[in-house]
Length: 163
Image 1 (cartoon, rainbow, N blue to C red):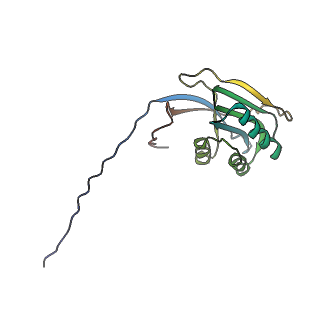
Image 2: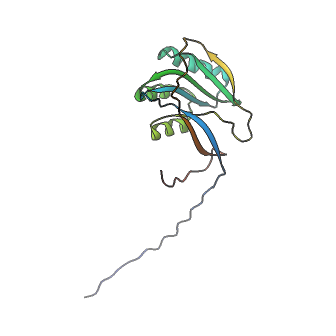
Image 3: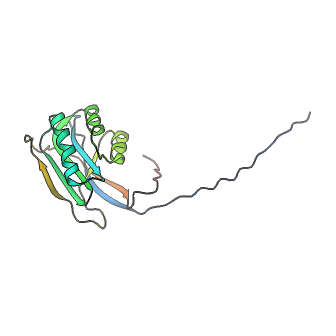
């Protein structure tokens, strides 16, 4: 009995960009009661555009005062202390123009959002640049501090080992 085999050899070239990382601190949206405080990460917009889109979201979803911070032009983070369920939180985020889609991706993947509070390398400390007043809600006493690593640049890819 004779067996014939054909083997095809394929050369695959793989290029990878490895980026330096930095350790940052943030706050989690997930509260002890299972609800989420509403957080936003906006990019590639002016402060006026960020205010306009967040004001629309604030009115549509009846959200409390929204605090907008920035550490560099065209990059804004914002939060309010209104609490919502996770599905509602995702609906709100999907309705936000200029949303950073990496923020959305990691929110879905982890089941909670993380909003950076520490200073990124090469940037000034964040400062409040605007407050969109609506109604006041007290600061939650169950905010979880989060420590995480992120790339110094947005280009490249991440290889996760373990969790």
